[in-house]
Image: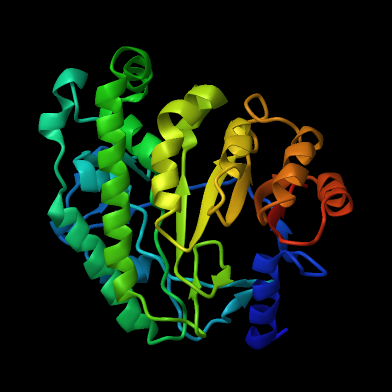
Length: 341
């Protein structure tokens, strides 16, 4: 299919009326190398190095990501996109130190005393400026050939967990709920402001916009998440954290909420947020101890599909893929899956 036909199907996806799911199925590869991060001072680093905005040169990362403007725009039913490299942007915005460890970028805590956290809350403008610089570079590089999209933004609970550390986050839920709510509100506002500023730089693509999942929509798309909800019950999530996720969701016309199968327990709480447009679930493999098997995920997948489009990604067996195709409605369904040998 050509791009015009794919865009027609993407419109149907949001209307939950497509005859077949959006699909891209490939083989799963478990091998991963520690990545070398190119820095503006000439170093290639993979472990125990702190990253600062002035060490980031977008051109070096374009070369690292091997961006080619002449490559096909489609992979399966999805659209190829460009996004700034994942530097734990939202955590960096609120002050978390950013460090390369084992080839991956991590955010580290910076708030030691929960009672004093409000005095530490301020936006790191240098990191925000670097996101906008990176975005502008990709827009100029693309020249409209490949859509530029929001990078991975962690949501308020993940930002708070990075700022405090996961142990202090859990303590704050019970001992310092008011301080925690102040932090979560600050995180939500920083997320919203940063995404608004980035979206102002991103031109339309085929009269609409794309997201990191390669899905097109007629309005700008926000992607958010709550990975650290794996530590808490659905009731605590709804009481303490959902209001700030809802604040983000209600700000943007098209918001996709990222979940893992390991924290699928909060999905029903998200379904109550009317303005949430879609839920994406990453099927965790090989973390089977923390994730329900596919057969146990199917009931909540079906419940999601009753009101919202569902995007499923991750690794499954061939028989699990057949089960998904057989049990789930094709309407409003997107499958970007890796098949286990």
